[in-house]
Image (cartoon, rainbow, N blue to C red; front, side, top):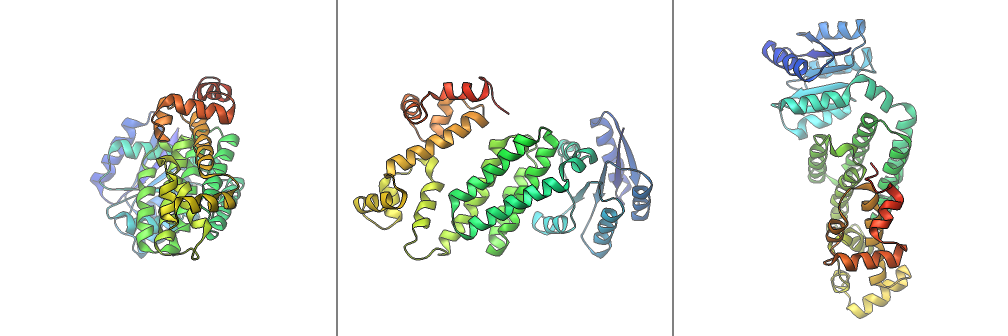
Length: 354
């Protein structure tokens, strides 16, 4: 039986939390602690599967309590509930090494979903040393490509990390935990870009944290990471981070707009060149003409979507700005050697792979 410790100094809120957890969890013992000392003693004496800690404000007393809880029982995940705004709460939660937080008032369904995702057995299994090293290695690679202003290689690193995660791990709770930690790491990589960027990244992260269905879908998680990277690279563009006439700046613009059906004229206008001159320069940079580059990039995205989602072929064609599914299928077959449907069947046995 799971043991969940609820530390809340408000008696009514304690009882409401116990009622929600008791009704929503079939086999869980809910233990209430009205005071910090009692909560710490229970953490020492019992092997708790989760601590739900209500923190009205992150003052010295409450931060010290959280630090002691992690010291006394480092393997017990901590879910914080607090009244306030995300920008004030999130930095404290991450700095103290806590697993997650919920802003009050929160729906009972959100509380139950968070509890199911964070219980001790999932957290301990998911954040062992090997998984930490994997995550840190990929975040380091991501930081290197960000410093090189290479958007495509950044998205490739994110995709490679998720591919390795799904290949080696089959426990959804572990995947969820690691996906969240990796996204948090990406948010931290945006720290040097200022408070405005941090707020935008934190907003994306906040939405992702409450999408428990999305966190175990590889392609959905990949889209969240790409959205964060788009925020970061938009700032690079706006703030003139690139050298004058940077080829990488133009490639990033094209790669970021592949799904929107970017045209040669649009890319040339962005590069401040005539279409004719841009076409020649582009082929010199990439080794292929513009149309081939865009088509190949779209087909690569289509291959990912066919394997990692259950979207119909028609929907994938529209997602990639193909107005006619037949034209998309012909372009796909020319590049891959089989139709989109055949490709999905060959890689997924006719079913969604996840």
